[in-house]
Length: 462
Ligand SMILES: Cc1cc2nc3c(=O)[nH]c(=O)nc-3n(C[C@H](O)[C@H](O)[C@H](O)COP(=O)(O)OP(=O)(O)OC[C@H]3O[C@@H](n4cnc5c(N)ncnc54)[C@H](O)[C@@H]3O)c2cc1C
Image (cartoon, rainbow, N blue to C red; front, side, top):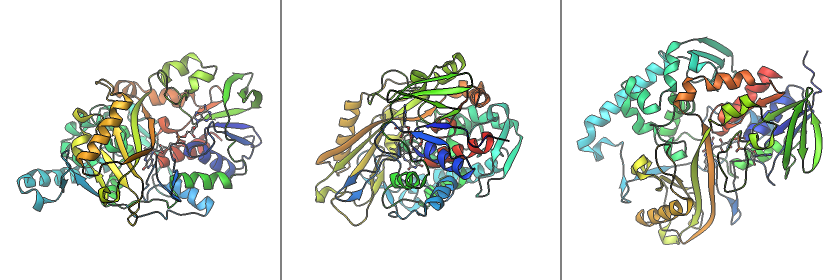
C-alpha cells in the first residue's frame, strides 16, 4: 500500500507543478509542498494587466481536447470564457494574402489540391501505420512501442507494439518525405513554428505530431479554440487558490541533497526534509540565462546519469514583445506571416496577436524565434529591432514597447538522442533518487501536455 502521508516536494508552480498538486490531492496525498521561485504562479502562462484587462505574454489558447486543462477547470469551477480568436495572413511585404483560398491563388490550385490530398493521407497513416503516435509522453516510441493512456476524456490505459513509431525520431520534414505528405507541412507550420516550437528540419516528428495530432491541427485550422477572459494565468491562479497547499511563492531553492531515502531541500536558507521530490522546473539550461534562472542540475546533488542525459536538452529562444500602436495603426485582427516562418528569415516577426475585437487601445503581442540548431543565434536586441521594423512593414508600427520577454522555450532533444532512447532512459530513472521528472521536456511544451504528464506521473507512481 502506498504511504499517502509521505512528504512530497514539487519544484515549480507552473501548469505541471500545480496540476501535480491537484492530482496528488485527488488521490489522497495531502502532504505536498509546491515551491515557486517567482512571486506569482502560472510559469509560462503569464497574463499581465493593461488598462484593467489582461494580455498574454505566454500561453494564449487551448483546444477542446485539452482534457487535463478541463480537469483543472472543473476542479476550480471556471471555464474558457475568453474572446473568440480570429486571424488573417500577410506576406513578408505586409500585404494581406489568403494562401489557402484557391480563388485567390489560381496558379497554385494544383499545389493546393495536392496539399489537401496529402493532409487526408496524413490523417489516414496516423490512424493506421502510426497507431499509438498521439499518446502523451514518449515512452517506448524509440523502441517501436506505445504505452500510456488514451487521448480521450476517460484516458483508458493502452499499450502495444508498432515498429513504425521509430520513424517519429526523424526530423518532421524528413518524416513527411518518407511518407509522401510533404505539403502537409504548409498547414502544420502555422500552429507549430510560429508558436515557438522550432523548425521542421531540426525537430523530431514525435514532438510535432504528439502536440499537433490530427484533431488538434484541424481545430487550429477551423479556429476552434479556447481562451480565457482573464488570461491563461487565471487558470493556474484559480487552481492555486483551490489547492489545500497553495504554492509557496518567492522560494529560492539553494540546494537539494538526496540521501538515506530522504530528500533535503534548502529553501530560503532553511533545510526541509521530504520523502520524494517532483521536478517540473527546467532540468538543464545551457550557459548563462538572461533572467538568472537555473536548471535542476545546478542546485541538485546531480548524479552522473542525470547529468549525462539532461545535458542533451536543447531550448528554443522565443521572444515576445508587448507593444502599443497609435489607434490608426492598430491591426484589426491577428496576423500570421508564413514567409517569416522559414529558417532563412530567422529573427523576423512570425505572428502578431490582437486579443480583443472591440478595443483600439489594447496591447499587441509579437513573436519571433532567433535560434536554429545549424545557424548562428541572432542576438536578443537585434531580433527585437527586426521585429519592430517588421511591424512597420506590416503597416502596424509600434508606438511603444510596454513589456518584453526572452523565453527559454520548448525543451527537447534532437533526433540522434531521441532515436538512442533518451526518453526511455529518463523514464527508467523515475523514482530512482526519490526524484520524479515532469514538466515540458517529458511530454511537450504546452499547458495541456504538461498537466497531462503530471496526471500520468501521479497515476503511475503514487
Ligand atoms: C509565448 C508563449 C506562448 C505560448 N502559447 C501557448 C498556447 O497558446 N497554448 C498552450 O497550451 N501553451 C502555450 N505555451 C506553453 C505553455 O505556457 C507551457 O508549455 C507551460 O506553461 C509549461 O508548464 P510547466 O509547468 O511545465 O513549465 P512553466 O510554465 O515554465 O513553469 C515552471 C515553473 O517553475 C518555476 N521555477 C523554475 N525554476 C525554479 C526553481 N529553481 N525553484 C522553484 N521554481 C522554479 C518557474 O518560475 C515557473 O513558474 C506558450 C508559452 C509561451 C512562452
